Amino acid sequence: MTHPADPMTGAADLDIDLGPARAAAARFVETGELPCIAFGVIDASGQSSARVVQGPDRSVDGQSIFFLGSVTKAIVATAVMQYVDEGRLDIDAPLARYLPGFEGERRERVTAAHVLTHTSGLPDLSVETLRSERPTYERSLEFALASTPRWEPGSAYEYNSAAWLLLSEMMARLSGQPFASALVQRLTVPLGMLDTSFDPRAQRERLVPVHGFRISNRLVQEVLLRFLVRAQLPGGGMFGTLADMLKLGRAMLPPDAAASGPRVLSGAAIDEMTRNHTDGMTHLSEDGVEREVRQGLGWRKPQADWPGSERTFTHGGISGGRLWVDPDAGFAFAFLSNAWQAPLRPAIAVLEEVYRTMG
Image 1 (cartoon, rainbow, N blue to C red):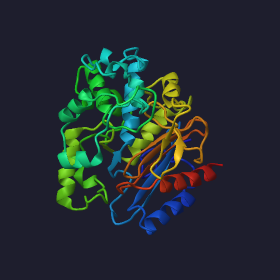
Image 2: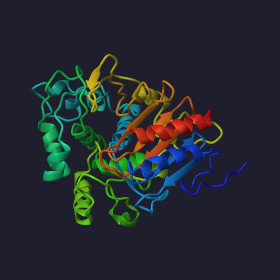
Image 3: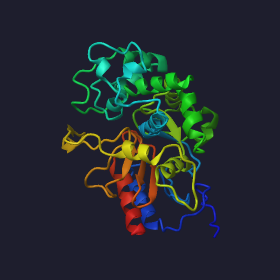
C-alpha cells in the first residue's frame, strides 16, 4: 500500500493523530514559553508525521532550519562510533594514541569514552567566553589540546562541550580530511540529511532566528552566525531541519525488514553507544537537585520521570531542540524550537501526548 507523503517531511505519511500533541505544543507558544515549535514522529519504515505551531516566526515549516545546539553531540557521537565499527578506533584507549602530544598531567589517561560521557575532567569554554571572544575552530582546538584534567578521568561527571574538539580532531586525522567534511561524507549525506551543517548561510531565508541571550538584533545575529560558521563547534554548533532530525532518528531504530532505510552503524554499536555508562554517578542539576547521571556515549538516557522504555536514548539542545529514539516503541521523535536556554518541559509534554496516542 502506498502512503501519501507528509507535507512537513516529504516522507510517507504515518497514520497517527498528532492533534493532542499539537495542542500541548500550542499552549507553550501561547504562553510565550517558546516562540514556535516544529515536531514530528517517524517509524522504522520511514513513515512520518509532523506539525508546526507558529508564533512570531510565521514562516516556519518542515523545511525551516533551526539552530540545534547540543543535539550536535548526538550527531558527532554517531559519527565517532562509525570508526569503532570499522575497527579504527578504540574508545577506551588513550586519546594520545590518535592525538600524539596529548600527554602529561593526566592527559594520557583521557579516552574518547571519557569525552563522550563527560567524565574527562577537562575544563570547558563558557558560553560567555565564546560569545565575547568568538574563537575560531583552531583557537578552540588549541585550548582543548592544552587543557589538563582537573581530576582523575572517569571518576566524576561534569557536562563539557570544549573537550569534543578532541573528538573532532581525532576524526579529522583518522579520515585525512577536515572534520566537517568527514562528517558530511560519512554521515549526513549517506542519511540524506542535506540541510544539516555548520554553515547554513546559503539558506538564510530558511533560518529560524533564536530568541533571547541578547541576540534578537539582526546585526548581532549575523555576527553570531559568522562566528558559529568559523568555530564549527562539535559540541553544539550545527543547524538542521525537522526532516533531517527524523532521518537520523530512523537510522538509530532497529531496521524494518520490509522497508529498510540507510544505515550508518551496526546494531551492536548503537546498543553500546546508547546504554548507560555512568552507573552510580550523580551531579547537581541546574535546578539545584542532585540527580543520577544517565549518560551514554554522546547520547543520553532519559530522566527517571520521563516516558519511554529502558532502551530509549535522547539528546537536547540549548534552543529547545530534542531528538528522542525509543527502539522498543518503534519510533523516533524530533522537537525543534528557537528560544535560548529553552525549558525542558515543552518537548517532554508534547512527547508524552505522542506516547498516549500511540498507546
